[in-house]
Amino acid sequence: MEIYNNLESKASKEFQELLNSQLSKTKNLAEGKIIEGKITKITEKFVFLFIEGLKSEPVVDINELKSLGLIENVKLGNKLSVLLERIEDKNGEVVVSASKALKIKGWDKLVEAYEKNEPIIGKITSKCKGGVIVEHTDTGSLMFCPGSQISDKPLKDISHLMNEPQKFALIKLDKVRGNACVSRRQIISSNKKEDKAKIIEKYKVGDVIKNAIVKGYSSFGCFFDVNSELDVLVHLQEISYSRVNHPEEIFNIGERHDLLVIDVNKEKLQVGCSIKQLSPDPFEHISNYELKKEYKVKVVKLMDFGAFCELEPGLTTLLHSSEISWTKKNPSVKKIFKVGDEISCVITEIDKDKRRVSISHRLTEENPFSVLEKKSPVGSLVEGKITSINDYAIYVKIDGYDIDGFLHSNDLTYDKNPEEELKKYKKDEKIKVKILEIKPEQQKVRVGLKQTQADPFEFFKDKKVNDVVTVKVLETDSKGILVLPEGAKVELQIKKSQIAINAADARPNRFIKNDRIDAAIQELDLNKRKVSLSIKLLEEIQNKEAVSKFSSPLSGKNLPFSSLSDKLEKKENKKKKE
Image (cartoon, rainbow, N blue to C red; front, side, top):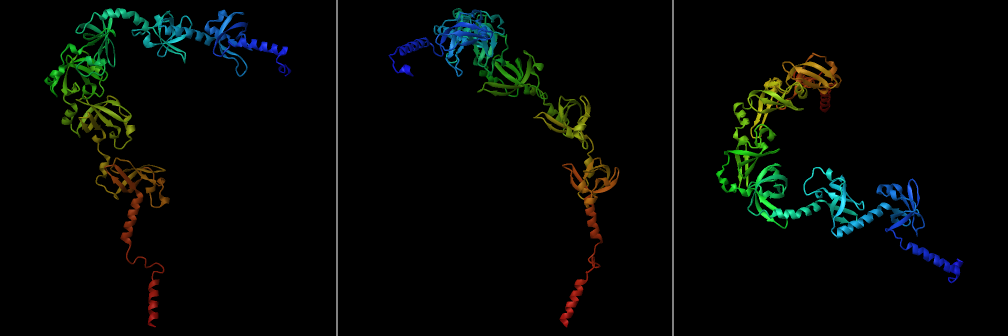
């Protein structure tokens, strides 16, 4: 530490001069600045730079330079611009970036063009979500162009614009994130603005435009192409006197319609038109139409949910798919009608306030379900053909009617497994069924097959609980006995617990197939179609009968000690007398 003892010494002055010279070299070095370095060494993976004032040589990845297109200029002794990110990291090394330096230089040029409102030259390099990526020709900076800003007209294919140098307008810069947004449409529109102003001057309020072509529509209106030189808008409220939710309910792309000019805006270069004002308001004489009366209507538009029809020009109404047919649940409107058809409909509603008229096509015909109810009421037998089968039911088209009856699997058989029975039937097979229920308003008919057969539970109609029946053993298992009452067609199960009073005798294997045994009815509910049999109950009934029949008041007197109380009483009386 002797060098600091005397600051006026020669050694101290030399150290001070050396320190000042070193500081003068590093005063221009700061993190975040772009600096130039001299290439001193090139390897297969890295390029080494010399930057005066740094204590170590910064290194640049050679792949980074290849991706930037700078590899051709990488030669010993050449200069390379880099961004100084860290003068010293945790490992004591200098961190630089060539790509960030190039991006910052390009960004400065974009900022200058944006502030001066000047167009830039770029080319579309690739597509991305929501738009395309544009590369700045001068700096290589990448910018985003939204799909709506590519052209002033909808483009299905932009392949002819790819990699072609063209002008773009800078519409947004985010200096914090370093993002740029450009527009090609703005350049095109500015070129057309002067021409469009001359076209607008041709039109005035009250003019009628003939044969304008439907070009497109949105939720607020419909766009028309006029003579391939001007696009005009017909607002939703100016399409029809009737209520319109969306233009696609009325128009098809490519259709031609006459338009009335109702507004000309020379500042915004817009022309507003109307279709409904070309004809008088039909709701002014809506009282000429009557409810529940039949009228002819013209189909003007077909949709998945129904058909739009005209009662008269300007008076459009919806014929919903549910009002087309009595029997078809979801009819295909496009298969039944076509545009231009004239069909009969009944007016079901007129709402002047909402400017709405509702119509029905099916009301022009009698409800076939009501006809069926009159001719074949509930309980009637009808024939039909199976039209479809699902996992739990069969649909039967009743002969003479365009009506499908619903046949549930539970109504197929009395005594067999419904699911197994369902598998026996096939489409187009003819069967006879009984009508169980008709609901004309809901367009539903329920039919049954087992109801056409004798009910096996009729056997128990005159029976009651505790009655004895004779049954035949069909099979046995660990759970009990499967039996068939004689004279009946319903199989019943006698549980193991109901075989005998004595638990030791309650064994199903006591019986064999075809054995005839008696059992008592333990439970009987014809409404629920439930019958339970019990051998145990029969034994209990028989025991009670035996006890009541063969027992007497003197019973038990012959048992040992039965007269003991009498002898004791006589002995006690004798003692009292003595």
